[in-house]
Length: 164
Image (cartoon, rainbow, N blue to C red; front, side, top):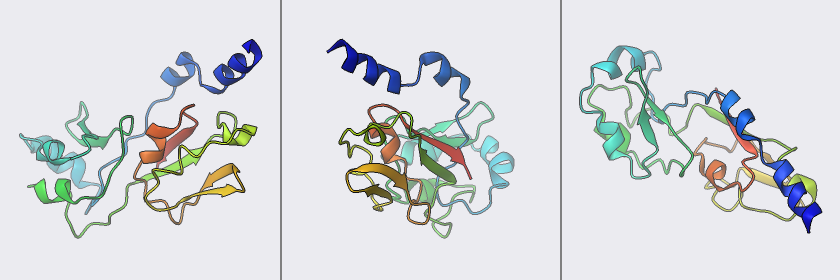
């Protein structure tokens, strides 16, 4: 029993390793022009995009620009943030895609170590997580919209993301 427990603990990144990683700045979907974040968002007093987000994943950074936080959930692409944006930074005509690329780190993934785990695949709205049989999942970049639901569901935190 102790050997199994040690094995699973070894798969979870240490607290020190987590602190070393600076989270990438991932913006909400429906971006019309990324340069508008710095010029328009700091002037927005009410931050309506935050209140409009049903999943509560939009946060305001110190520079007063919005970013997504996937620790509790993901984006359903409901359009609410785009409709709420008075500055035109987010707009319904912008792409329903998030500027993030998700990657499964094999050293921390249970399925890459022979344990059946579909925790990341089950919430994926786009069927972007592909398995070789029941093991070795990979994220198909062509299908992935960057919604982020897989990240919060992984029991070993083996999924990371980077800004595109």
